[in-house]
Image (cartoon, rainbow, N blue to C red; front, side, top):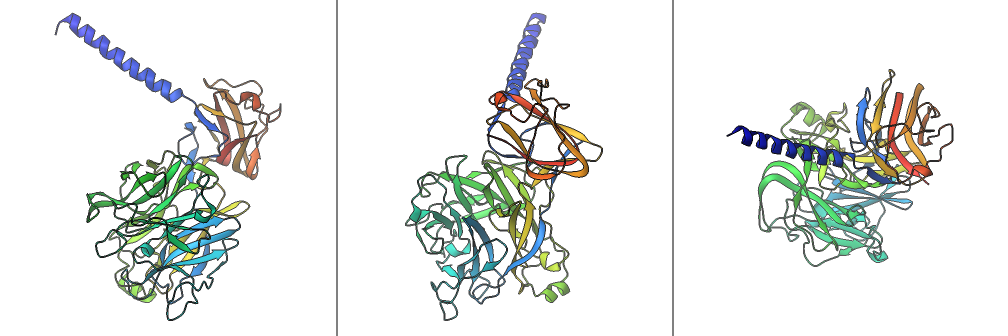
Length: 497
């Protein structure tokens, strides 16, 4: 190559590199429009830089057993729970089993609560079990009851008579379900088919497959079991690889898009048995997944311990726990924290196969509290549901040590006139917030020195400066927030009117 050609090639390459760099920089500098949405610090979405602070996951607190599966139509293999907060009533759905360990005799059971802490099993008189209709069974359709998972349909304009929807079913030539079937209900107790025939037929489905109306995507979304490799048709399923999650979308709950495998960042390394994906109720643009992580062939208890606790012989040679996954686009699960959200306890009962699987949905159970429910003691006589509590928005936080640190947000735009934080400090801790322009220059009147020191513990703490807390003149502009902290946590922020 001649010197001239070499020079031209080098200049062209440099120009290409510069164009890519400029485009990348431009994209990186584009402000994130958070409107007046609440934003949780569960990932790096809003964060530009961390200095001596870190993203910290917070473990829920074990509040103990809330429901024992002690009826003849329930038993050791109850599972795949869904909890729905419907006004002032909490509704719980779970799989029961009349006899045996196979799929025969599976039923869908129902319980309810007024506070999320104390649950009752109403006698509904709908289906017979053990020679009586005095039970809490709401559905007995074979296959569908293996993993029946309802949701409260929040689609605008949905008829009141169809305000509850559900999907359930298996892909098995010996089973009449033939895939996921759709159901609907007005009261969440009396269910009827929504469509004649299965609505999703390509997948594995042998776990809890969850769905909801997405305000973020303006459609129904279903997250269901697939495998990382294998062959799937309506007639057969030959899985290989890891248990994983795929998704499909629909405008009417009947006609669904082709399955699309979810991406994991970082890449998936172990089995995800159920994803339990749902929009977070205080920030529906954020999908939260309290997923069951399944560690196959990871035996931790002895045969003697297995006999002592009475676990079924086929269910103590694996282990599992739950992890927190989040998604902001519905297609990628961010695994910001690889550590367990809820670890198995000291009880050997929690170190068996397929126990520790969370119920679908995190719900509010107090003015400053939310709860997640977990199936424990699977395949054992003591099988039950447990409640675990967290502060509102408290999955994770930006955490500063006593020595102090700070973090800077990316450029963002907002609507509203006040900044509220969900935050906590120690008695000696503090938080201050500086508002900068998009280039990082502190805005007059909103500097760090102008900010009123924040200390204490609050779900909704309004930030103020010497001039007050009115930010309406900054609404719509590109700004950055600089947080300087000491022995403190910031869980979430929101700009309000």
